[in-house]
Length: 109
Length: 451
View 1 (cartoon, one colour):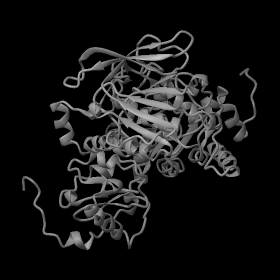
View 2 (cartoon, each protein chain N blue to C red):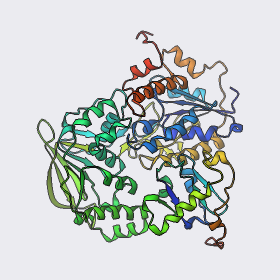
View 3 (cartoon, rainbow over the protein chains, first blue to last red):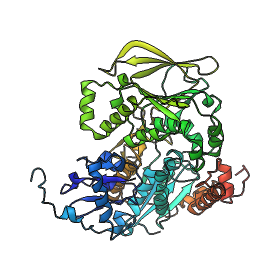
View 4 (cartoon, each protein chain N blue to C red):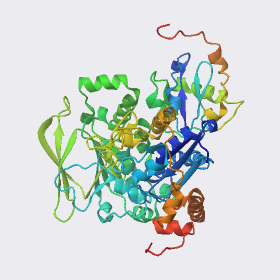
């Protein structure tokens, strides 16, 4: 099991989860954050702290949300499990589905 | 040793380790960290708090060990500040001191009967099953067939789960040997988790709550009336998905008829403990029912619950030590945003992180954000102190005093011994249960008491 980031993160990326994650397994793309599920230890710190409620536990996903999990896994197909976002130090290529989505304007823009 | 800043961190639990992490991750910042702990072992509540069956969370120790292994970090276990070394001696040697000492004392109910045999704190119970060294607990009453767990947070859930967990599952964890021997034989028929406020005000997290549904041979009993919420509560639930999930889990259980299993886990809310009854030991628990419309008001109705043991899991608090400013109300070290309000020579040199800073709230990850913030504060504001060039290194000072320091190398020998014993029995590790055993494992000869 793992935690999963949904579309509420896209173009918002508050990044509070990144500092909170005890294993540093939340990686930033250009438009969304992604959880490396092989590194995640299911502690739930990210879900509690996310100001836009973008993170849920895999076990809480509704059937129609299961593709979020697939998407999240696919993002790491190239880089694998780098062992921590800080050490990885690069911006992850967004998932094609997300990359193709129209840009959301941030509130107040 | 030409570090720009020398920092000592008191407490090698997650908060202290994450502070060490943030201070030393960027080698160019040139920070040297000494990491003290009063136990011979690092990892604090990850080792002695997190329940043994939460194997995935326990795997965090691999990440934390990598911090200890950094060249800029020196681990020194088995050292108590205020006993083996004074606060002033740390302030004389380091540019900054960070306290990450947690909240080691359980909150008390302050009701009659609390000291009866059979009334125990969750911290003692958890210390017992997690092999905290030299912990003693009267386990006799814990074999009672009916046990009340007071509190509505994840610690209460851990305690209830450990009482009811299948023994086969427990055998593949690093649960303390002494607990395994006891829990193998005794499993209560009924465990009551009792919250003082409403279900919506419970501090459980949904995953930990739902996990109880996986307990074999246990019916979970929730009464629908216990889940009725005030308008205020309903509004809060509507805004907080985590609470909504909790309520959903509880409602699912409330609508599931019991299947006559051998054991039962009951959730009860809006009940305030008033008195623990019994002569020689706990016989029953008197509870006051609270008003669902305003959960701080008593209804005047009381109920008595026949239980042979009461485990209180109503939070933890800190205690004053080594003359460090302490806030008795919050149970934390007196601080503003992690900066200790020091009365010590007016020098801005002391900081605090983790539970010692903010009280016993949050999950392990909360401490990473907290410690990173404090480390950034240290990096931006601590200045190298004028150090007496003849001042001895802390290790030399402790050596002269005859204090046995468990270094990182010695800790690795303890770790090795525990894993070796574990492998023999198909368990991840078997923790050593006394300081003496640990010192033996790292081949420290028994020293004569005179020094």
